[in-house]
View 1 (cartoon, each protein chain N blue to C red):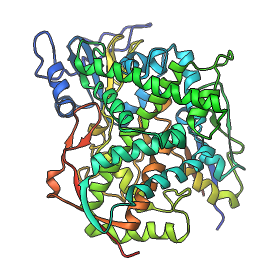
View 2: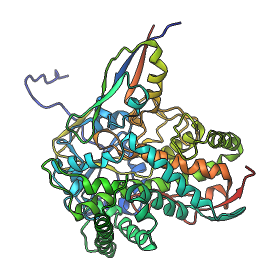
View 3: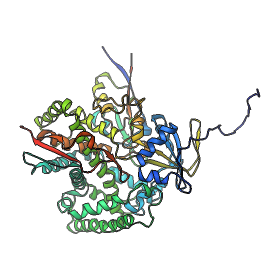
View 4: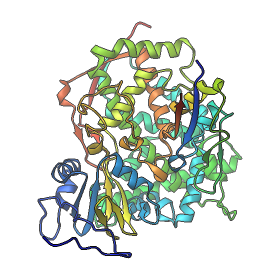
Length: 455
Length: 73
């Protein structure tokens, strides 16, 4: 037996090779599998390799890290080391050059300060009323009973709620099908392949770019109209129109459009999917929980708080359904950073130039953090470590709209459950998770029946 | 039975939502450190007992899970 090699000085920490995911193909690595079935692929990577695994997206070496401890190391790393901007370049054609990750970090910081102005706690109170108004309009023509596709319905509803809070009543009530279509075109330009090359020659990306231009035209018209009328409002558009960078420069029309799309993108599909899953889970659990859910929301109405601020204290079980839906069916499943200085975690070193990815869908099913993880349990306590549950990401780049998102979904369901009862139109197993773009959604069609309550 | 407690905040994960300031302004404030959003700052880490319900609300309702109450007995 030879004695261990004892070396002194600054030799780097001994590291082990990162376990490599099987099934690589010549030239493209794991790219095809990741692009076509990203979620299944990431689950397989974890099952095969554990906490840290590596794969190859056609030359882009990517390391998946799973679990609260790994997430915490990831989220607490400085931006100079694990960089979000470099990893999210697929957002640049959508938001526009010079916006968020298409801008230098110093500009991005100032833009984020502007976004934050609209998400301050004091601003939230004004949003409850607008969301409640939309929820009330949503159900006004439903009649006593019926059935429709709630994935589509929530996509439409949350487009209205976001637009209402963001661009104001004037814009919201002029909202046409065109806005929704343009917005959908942006969305379809965000597929798994865009992580590698968002500017590839592709019909979906061409449509995305055309939609971005047309949206800029529509939003610019709204801005000019407000300026011409000297109209002011308490919405995000007002913030963007009056905000200045620290050197006093205002936002250009291109930048205002980018800020709007950035905010919408952050909040629209994530909220609509969360609403759809929450409804499906409420239907699945109604035998056990319906009476208590109804009692909670009826109390909110009895107290006259249906259009004002509610918290998880007012509606704990409903809030539990929303949070548990976010755990089971997190909308965003590839949280990514580019390594710009070698990153060490436990016995592993991830070299500069690689991407590191976290996947909430994989991490939210770990039994150490979530006992009996496949069980949907609206009374599940929060995990010990806040980094175990990451539907909104974490750290410096965590979604700053998270409180807004929850208020929106809470308010929508307070209204729906007060006036209606819901039932799945198909057997429960019919409603599956699918991920055609980078956002997880229920399979199509997502039909649900409703019946008016006697209230 | 009097409950002694301390308040601990993890500023590394705060994004200035200010829910704590709304619920317990005697204990929490936010300061602008020049970053994208202000960051929570403790006015005191050992508030009087009678503020405990307010501090508990701040802990429970913080969207980022920044606040922790440590009970000392």
